[in-house]
Length: 173
Image 1 (cartoon, rainbow, N blue to C red):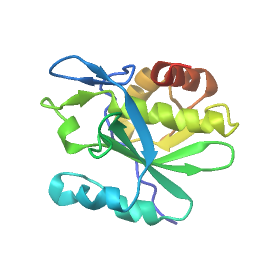
Image 2 (image 1 turned 135 degrees about the horizontal axis):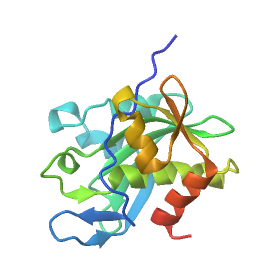
Image 3 (image 1 turned 180 degrees about the horizontal axis):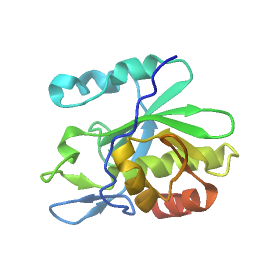
């Protein structure tokens, strides 16, 4: 059996988009499917934690990048999603290295990416259902920030009511 990776990203803030930590400006974003070309600079030597090229090659998995609207070249965060038929499963999620820690440039990236997963599920006719495997120490955090509920072991689910809140926050529907 393949060991599932656990989600280990801190939801720093739920914002309307992403917010520059220096100026406080809110910047509109795009979430676009990643290409191999996009991942040339996404390497462990540049501070990324996961093998995103390997993730991109997995059967049934799609990887998306979050960028600022006027700059699609700089990746703010990545998410790997799998359509399970009745919900979207989040395999991996990661902030760009410059968006982690006290000196991060932008807040709101993980919330934005989770909202996108919910929207994709909603658009697919699955009422926004999203699931993921959480690190044990972050389960309560995901419950408080995303409204995710623990269904068994470390599996968390974002149900329709909470999914809709995230979608409305980030996608202004």
